[in-house]
Image (tube, rainbow over all chains, first blue to last red; front, side, top):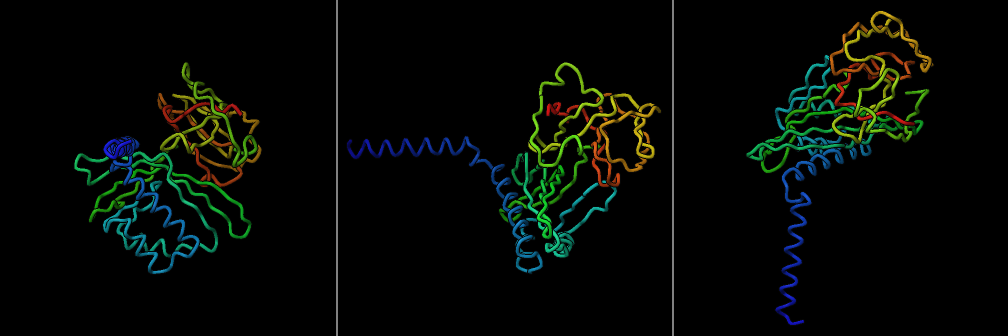
Length: 166
Length: 119
């Protein structure tokens, strides 16, 4: 095979790769949002292992939230407002009593036309593990998240629990 | 759903069960959250249009006590009466040995019910 044919074949392969990459969703901003949420869950899970109280960890987690984040857990609870409040509450969690693993399931991302805000629908799944007995229990809640792109990164601006059983 | 179903068990769901008609009383159903990968497993006790309440742990349907032989642990829950909408079913777990506030139950829209648990 001549050098020219080789180059042509390589270019063809590259083009096919780009097409596959694009249609598999990797080129889609929705995938970026999903990846960001997965990293957020990873950070939280790491916090339950190494302790959440370190300032560095708190700073790291705060990069996933907007300054004016609002969390509404429903069922008569008072909404939590502001990143500092959320991080402060999270720091007071006691990972020694029980560890948990958070994952996001059935994630649907709807982007606005400008692709700077998004609405995300998902199920947050918590697997709690008792430190003393090792017993695991599962809890899950459906959430609607509002996300905003700030300084090139997607951040959670609101989180509202959806009541499945009313 | 103890004692009928235990935690961590694998179940088979008939997704075609309610294509022709809605769930029946006593059916154990899968109820989706944001999608089909995480579901509640609950028993249907109230059908559309019915009045449902719980008094001292006994379920009342339109004012009549519902016989529930599948319930083993029963705490004296009191739940105010609700009237179900045209597309609503009242679902609840079989294990009622905890406080009512620690148990997820209530009205589920028909479009949330994925199908019937076969086993």
